[in-house]
Image (cartoon, rainbow, N blue to C red):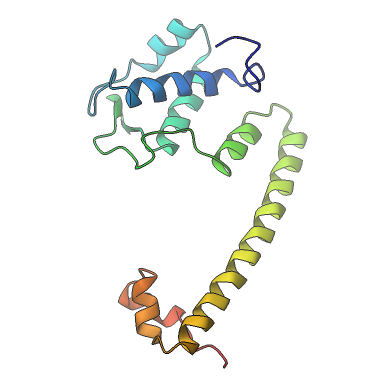
Length: 165
């Protein structure tokens, strides 16, 4: 990584380290089930604090690339996600950036702003979902079929209400 790479110079240490482990897992240097170095070894290797390494571990777990076993360490996941460990997009990246913000007041403000943005997105998605369900229902698809196509379990089929036609 060179400082001239766009958008890379401002990345936090935990993100750069997590991306390095992501690449190693993706390219097969670290095999499923293999142990990662201990947190103290990682901290020494990268010249960072244990707090930074804990963030690395948390980020790798959120990407579905590793699992941790209490008092034993971290291991590459046996089943990697379909995206082969690609760096996730929003909201996880934004959440990680907010968590890494040192000023608590700024962190709270950023979290509030992001929450509001996602509440708006969720409302939009909810209305799109409802319209799609209404369209399917008007086309003759039963509520049970709609629920099955959405992957809802039998106990959750009641979430599909007969839309007002």
